[in-house]
Length: 83
Image (cartoon, rainbow, N blue to C red; front, side, top):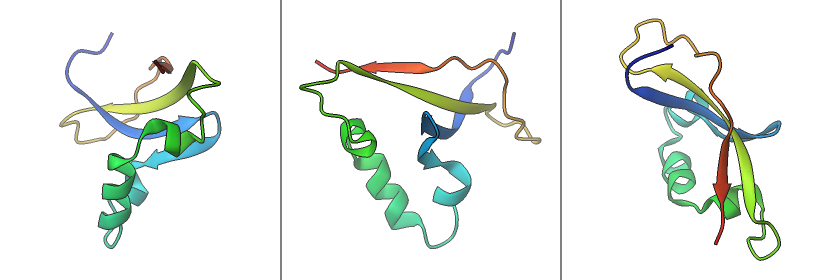
């Protein structure tokens, strides 16, 4: 079991990328990152919340401050519900 603060690296819906840490933190991608971070999850996933009750996201994480930036195994999917 891991202890510490998790830092999100990548967010996927199935095989479709929503956020890639390496790309969004590249020089020249600041505006794209800001736009992605400000967007609603329904817009990023093309979900219609009137038809769908939730979306499942696969998230990769590392331990914050880990010098190796090793992706942690066993991070469960996150289910985001819409009201």
